Length: 560
Ligand code: GLN
Image 1: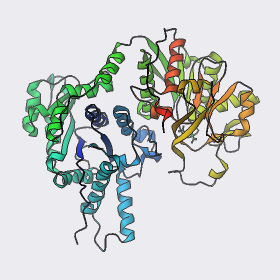
Image 2: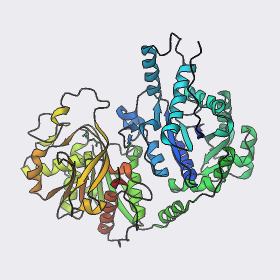
Image 3: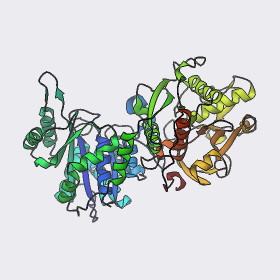
Image 4: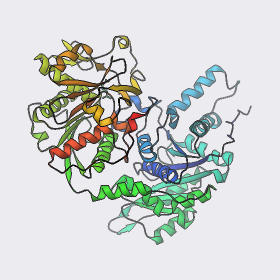
């Protein structure tokens, strides 16, 4: 029996599929996000979707070594870090529908099989798995009210894991029509020293692999160190069977936010729109041009230390570093990052903090490196260096403050010390019976009420804000009073006052730490208020003149 294929929607949504070849790590996510930018810059409604070939349901339980940062959405979905790029480049808020993994697809198909939905059919990769994938892709168009959906396929053409995804997007060309689909392939064009030449062969092979799967790319974006000449682009066009103007050179850029400008300058926007039969209005990329110009013009530098566990792996803190960059641009400075390994940090040694203008302790899980992070908070407190604590960074600051307030080292989070005398950070009573690690956290957007007059309230310019969470443990209210005696202000709480969301220290130039992750809502043109004000304090610490902030910018977090 022929299983019913997903109903092809009557909507006129167009789909742009982004695949990658030759090697991974070419910036496929940034390319997909940049396509989103050049389409939104024409007033089109754009949504984005990442198809991840791994079998995990989501990256929530994956180690940052495997996967880099876990990006959290408003709805609490734990997603691939590319969704962070999408949100930053398109200035949108995505939903869990925008990240599909092999694990999600298979668990849905197996659940349907168990329910008997397939009416006795043998359940197979084609068509059952591919139909489920197509359904998920089409769903983004339906729920998001998008005119164009950019779909990024994770992995590299030729990987076993990504084959069902590639087969599904191949089928969509016939399902939806050639004019409603566009296939863009991103490859590497390496420079071979010795022969002193850029080589197109890996791109040719990668396109052959893609065609073997049945996908003829409509455009090829070539990553290389420098700009590729016409000769090489024409050669690639010939071998890959695309028009010469559809071979786009994407050389290394000094800032990722230049990529939309490079793609647009190469004519990709009009080419794409013509293929998709969309009106090809001019793109308004003025804000991006100004952002890039400001980024490149900044010469004064502030040095910010990030005290974390994955210092050799900056992808683990991608949104943090991006949020710092957004804030730095708003103050017309460059932010130089110093990675400080919390695990090897000797709590008595202040040398790693020397000459820093600010210290960030980002989020994290597990006991490794905790004492180093607590030492970072102590150093910042005692030396008046600006401090920004993000989730775990707030918990470590609370432990540091409690140890000082109570005069004992036996203050901790029950995550790291189950039987500590003073559980300053603890599970809520109703959380105590939880055993699964996946999907048991406070995730996604929660309201936070701010106390007027505090540094946090001034930063936001609002009394109620919404921020994204990803944690299990909370500040233990039993310790509020003792910490308050040290000058701690609980400037943000849940509206019922039950959960501490932000702490700040009076009499310090800037000591603010939040239980949520502000970095997930920072945008290039709209730096997050807390990160922006932290950067302002760093600029002051560096002895630089403080630029007035951007006028008239709306605060991302002040709306749900
Ligand atoms: N490990 C801490 C908790 O679960 C903090 C989590 C984080 O920093 N994202 O509460």
